[in-house]
Length: 247
Length: 247
Image (cartoon, one colour):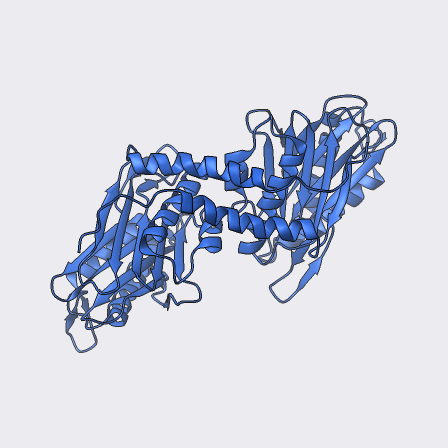
């Protein structure tokens, strides 16, 4: 299982991903699911992957080797001249990998569903965040709904849905993203530490944060504990239900 | 879709269920999913249903008509001499309905999955809460994990998982249950108002609360708004992440 979130805000972009994978509850491992690409002077991007690991890793390898266009040219993220073009390449790589491996998996009950979050900026264009589906199509994050989630997204959604707006600062977005990850990890053992984080400020070409947060990280431990305490205080502050109990 | 929660605590039992059903996003209706049974002088119980409505309604009708045992006797909830016996009857009714209707549904892609929460007390025995699966088997709620959820359970789980213990008061449990419902309704349109509530205090034979909370209910509206505000205040109180942003 996996949980990845991407938040595209006025001030920039924050992306987070856990690192736990499992093929059955007795076969748990750690894999990086947040991949950061830097193209000095041109821009930078990050790709967060959820779903079948053999498909997402194959898609990443196809991307690294380059995708041939109809005219025989080889395209990579580095040669893409916009985030839109780059997202098309990522979509093509994911579609090819999903088709090839999906065919093999169709003889089993293993799901071939996979998806990516892909965000960043290139060639001085604006920051973009895309949610890319296994068929290669994608949607773009907009001001109205300024975040995407993939993988085990439900446990961590309420805190984002209630708190994130396009105006949220990058620091608050990172904090809320970590709370969302923490809520998910408490409910699903298949999502786990460490957490990888990528942040890109609005006018930056290179990552402003490219970090792994370990399970022993003092800030994360304190955030988790303080959040539990704060929730308790928060519901204690709400008056008791007024509905009369009959005896 | 549906979301039901049951909380079995030292002081008693609280059960909550939404009322929205849908057969496709363009076919939305309201049905009671929390059914209350009162047996004056003997006890009372409630049954919350999630899953295919034709199956859960059929199971309830079978229960009302009575289930024949091997010796030809007809058993109903009223003739059950313990909550364990009653849960076995409910499980049998759900299994029969699931088998009959599941066979019809197997020709479509409509899911036949259904489950019940069944809680209450009978004949002076202790309060029990069971999670009953479509095959008729069931598990019992215990002090270590004092709540069950069925249906669309993930959005509303974090608040319960962080806050509910066996020692939580019935009033707090009801408040937290309503927050859990509210979090779910904000994330999934297929879960909706009004909310039905049942509560049974430890030493009571009859329901202490058997209530429908409408969308216009002033306490529920205030709880929803105050919870949003409190969450904002709560995450504002947590210090910003200390990770250095590079520029």
